[in-house]
Structure formats: structure tokens, C-alpha cells
Image 1 (cartoon, rainbow, N blue to C red):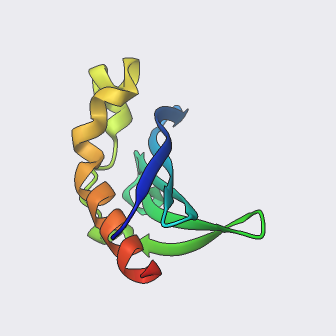
Image 2: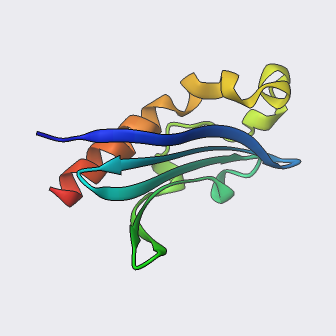
Image 3: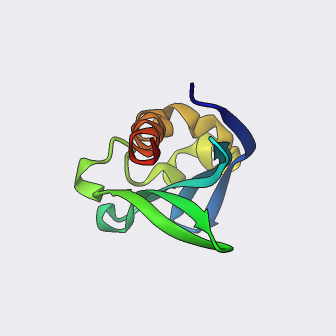
Length: 107
């Protein structure tokens, strides 16, 4: 049985042209960082999962930006710029994909 415990979930403006979703959680005693960036330029967007090993975050999996469901340019949406957490539904598909792949890779 998979055990998952959330440590932190945040949405924030990373620059004047990007919005980021980050989640830190523990999955079966391993510390995981999930990070998704919506930038104004598609090729600067990313969706990555990291695992903490020897006090360093190591990339476990990366969704190519061309395959991401998260749209570029979310920062330009009026509601999201003022309140980044309102963009949760925009990140949801990539969050689920990363979590599923992380479970598979670490099983």
C-alpha cells in the first residue's frame, strides 16, 4: 500500500512571466518535490519530479514541455496573477501524471 503525506503545497509567481506550482511530500519514506512551471514561452515551461537523496534534489522524471497539459502564459490571467492558487485546475492534469509516474518509478 502506497503512503503519501503532503509537507507543503504552494503556488507562486516566479517572475513577471511565470507561475509555478510546487509540492513537497513523502511517498513511502522518500521525500519528493513536484514542480510545474507555466511560462509565457512554451519552451520554458516544465513539469518535473525530484527525489531527495543525500540532501540533494535529483530529477526523477521530466514531462517534455510539448507534452504538458498545463498551458503557457498563465501569469497573464488576471485572477491567477493576483491569486496564483486559483490556477490549481490548470496544473491538475500534470500533477496527476507526475504523481502516477513517480509511484511507478519508485515502486
